[in-house]
Structures are given as structure tokens and as C-alpha cells.
Image 1 (cartoon, rainbow, N blue to C red):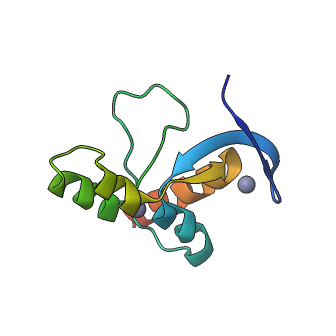
Image 2 (image 1 turned 90 degrees about the horizontal axis):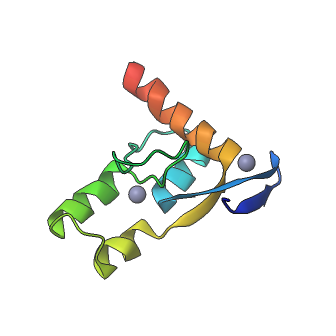
Length: 94
Ligand SMILES: [Zn+2]
Ligand SMILES: [Zn+2]
């Protein structure tokens, strides 16, 4: 069972977890990259942006306290997650 979240736009949805930059990209409409664990079989795995990925790499590829502080995980509803991912997909296709 995954957690539920109440979204003003989408109603009750599956809770997803993303970095604050991906969260912001929904407002700005600007793609910031989209990374997730390759071995995840979740339909909406935890996701983070390119900037966060660079911080993680500089931390040796681990989610250290420094990396986690930069990510600043936000809860996003499933519908908003799909929107954020669509922004990234559109930017990648162009
Ligand atoms: Zn980020
Ligand atoms: Zn939503």
C-alpha cells in the first residue's frame, strides 16, 4: 500500500516523493531533469533533478546528509508527478 495525499487539483492521489526543484518545475514549467532509481519497479518512483544528481555524484554517489539537504524531499500527488514528468519529457523531445 502506498501513502495517499490530498491534492487541491487532483483530489485523493498516490503520494510520490520528489526533490524541491522538480516540485518548482510544475510552477515554472521549466524542465530540471528527471532521475529515479533504475531498479525501481514502482510506477512513480522517487525522482530528483539533474542538479541533485550532480550533488549526489560529488558525494560519492550516496544520499548523504548534504545530498539529502539539497534535495529537500517534497510530497507530490500522483497527478502532479505525472505533470512534472511530462514537462521533462517534452523538453527532452525538443
Ligand atoms: Zn533537485
Ligand atoms: Zn495534484
